[in-house]
Amino acid sequence: EASRRGALAGGAAVLLSAAAPRSALAGKAPVVDVGDSAPGFDLPAVGGSTVSLQSLLDAGKTVVLYYYNQDGSPGCSLEAQRFQQALPDFEASNAAVLGVSMDSIESHEGFCSEKGITFPLLSDESGEISKAYGAELSIPVFGKFSDRQTFLIDSTGVVRAHWLERDGSMASVKTPEHVNQILAAIKEL
Image 1 (cartoon, rainbow, N blue to C red):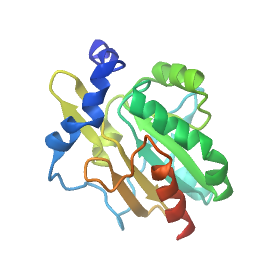
Image 2: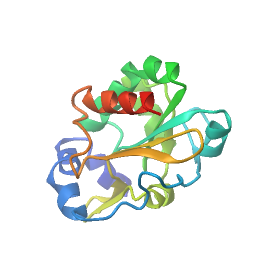
Image 3: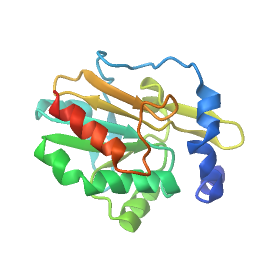
């Protein structure tokens, strides 16, 4: 498993952001969608903490929960850096940004250190929470990963927006547009 994930750090990661997810998941209905209650979670985070959706909601936070394929891949690195650059805007809107993948905490720690990421990256190594959100991606040869998508969860725990890369509703993570989509949606809450 680890060796297959390691292979993605190079050019093979392109498979995850190109045709593979779209063809592998074409027509798959979302498990969690706009208007649904967000499934709760308690996941380990960088720094030895555990992040609970309920604790963030209890604090009155809006939650930006974004799933990404793998630490260190080109698209995922850009996506994390875009969120990091806009973190002051999210914080000013009382929103917590959480990145989730099936990578280990150790992998997340290296990724955060290398890319200067300061918001919580959560480890869903079992894939249980990714699956609960309909964000589990399985590709033969490479194994299971989190499918690139983002959920905007309001302070009552209701999903208010949902973007999927594979259906075209998510702007490219290679530009600031996806982050701008989320910030605009937060302003509408």
